[in-house]
Structures are given as structure tokens and as C-alpha cells.
Length: 392
Image 1 (tube, one colour):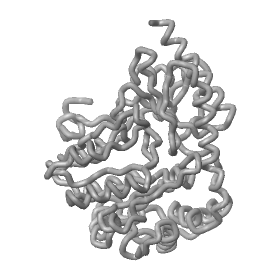
Image 2 (cartoon, rainbow, N blue to C red):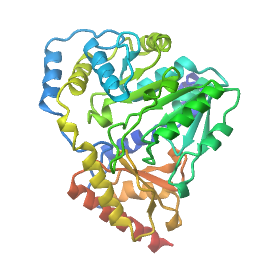
Image 3 (cartoon, rainbow, N blue to C red):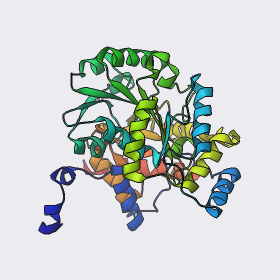
Image 4 (tube, helix red, strand yellow):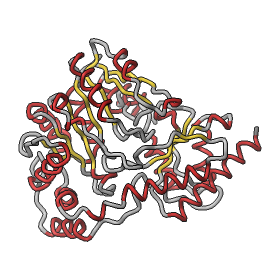
């Protein structure tokens, strides 16, 4: 960066890291690993879009128009009906639903609307990257570490102890990215009590709501009457509906909050893409059978990976949901940064260092892949382990 351009860019932005997953994707786009090929490991199930979704997009592209700022009515109504069925609560599609350009855009809108300088966001960790969404507003992320020895179970006392008079948001992500922890109904009840006692809102990122394993069921805090008014729900079609290229997400919240989110969204985006919204509407309102195998595919992939590494120095808390394995590499005597870099540059494995996720001893790796690719991934892990051990 030249001195001239550096002068123009705010000091806050200059201090921010890039989003780690985008850095990895960019490297893979322009480089080849030292050995083998880049492995097609994705953070979503390896399923193609069904015919009814593709057809809806084609129809919308043939008859383009600007979508309403709140989102296509057919999509908002589909979201409301889906949540009514799931949570047993009435959602007003005209006043309580806002369609966004993906889940990240939804989080951005929420934080911009609610946070002021000095406010705090309570975030149980390890966690998804939020720095660029929060810190450039002058607000502060308060990370609350969860114990790996307890399966990353949420320590509710520790979370409540972290709350101060400046705390405004409790960030709730379930299934958790990156650990795969799925919060229970009782945990959600207790979180609701904590939020009420301290008068803070719950920002519930449920982007992996359909990706739960071993018979577990995702529970939304919207399903709890005591949490309904103070819950801001964010979901995405990227993972659970296997629509990563479409970038459609949404916010569901109390009508007054949603009106403010709408105003902020208009200043950022005006409105979301009509073609992508039409595809999302078809996905949520049309046949759902094609999604039945999504979680089962990832569960089988999870088991295949964990079986492949169970006798080695890598350890892992078995994910209860989500599209990742989160490997602890400290048994190798190296940190997550070094091991993730080795996996990517030498073996073509799209690993993210846990240091970007508040867990520097770990690496996060997506498990959406075919069986052959997954077997190659396990082989790469073994070879990478051997490389490290030879250097020690």
C-alpha cells in the first residue's frame, strides 16, 4: 500500500484481518499445492441444486424486476411458515422478516443497527470470525472460552460473569461454528434467563440448523416464549439448503427491531437480488425430500474422518452438527497456524487456523466431499503428521 492510499484508509480498517476462509479460498484459486491436487472440501453437503430451485431461478431471470427492500413476499411468507411449523410461533412476514444477501450481510446489518462505541458483544468461543463486523464500530468482542475437556459445553456461569453494564448482545451460534456443539433446550432456557436478567438481546446465528447428527434436533430460541421478544434470528440458505452461490440469508425479529434493520439494510444494499431470492423461495416452499440426506451425508463424512485419525496424535471433540471437523494439533508440538499452512500449501487441504477462531491450537477443515475426496483428505492428514514428526 502506498503512503497516499494508506492516508485515505481509516486506522480501524487498517488494523483488521481479512476473513480467514476467504484468504484460503484466494490462495487456492491462484496456486497449486506442492504435492497432489487441491481437494474439493466444502462447508456444505455435496448435493446439486434440485430441478425446482434451478427452474425458479431461470423463470426469475427471464422476467427480471427489482425486489422489495424487505425481500420477495413469496420468500418472506415461506420463511414465516417454515418457522411457524418449526417453532410453534406466529411470524409476521410483512413486519418481522427481512431478506439479506447471505448470513454475513444479516449479521452486519444487526451489528450496525444496534452497536455504538463502547458496547460489548458476549461471544462464547471458539467462534466464527466477527472482528470486522464489530470492532470497526468501536464496540468490543468479549470472548468467553469454553472448555474442550467438557466437549465445548457452554459454561453458563462463565458467560454470565462476563456480562457488564456495557454488554448489549449475547451471540448465540448453534450448531456452533467451528466446534459443532449443538445447544440443548435447557441451555437455551438458561440463556434466555440470563439475557432477561441483564436486559441484553440474543443474536441467534442458526445458519447450520438442518445439519445436526446422531438423532439430535436443532432447537431455536424463537421456540421459547420467554426468548421470543429479545431474540434476533439470523439464518442462511448457504449451508442448510446447500445454496452457497446464491448468497441469501434473512433476519427474523420483533417488528420494531426489523423496521430499524430494514432502514440500515436499504442504506447498504437497497434490496437483495431477485433471482437468488426466487431460488430460495422455491427451496423453502417446494419439495423438501432432497434435503433429507444432507445431514446424513455429512454425519457419515464426519465419522469417516474421525475413524481415520483416531489412533494418531490429532484429537477432536466429536461434532454434534455443522460441516467441519475441528482438530486439536497440540499433540504434534505445533500450533494451528503452522499446521493449517502445511495442509494448504503442501497437500491442498483448505484448512483454517484456529487462531482466527479464538483457538490457536486447532485447525478447522470442511467435510463436504465425495467419499474418494474424503479418503484422500485423511491420507493427507497422515502425511502432514509425518512431515511434522520428521522435523521434530
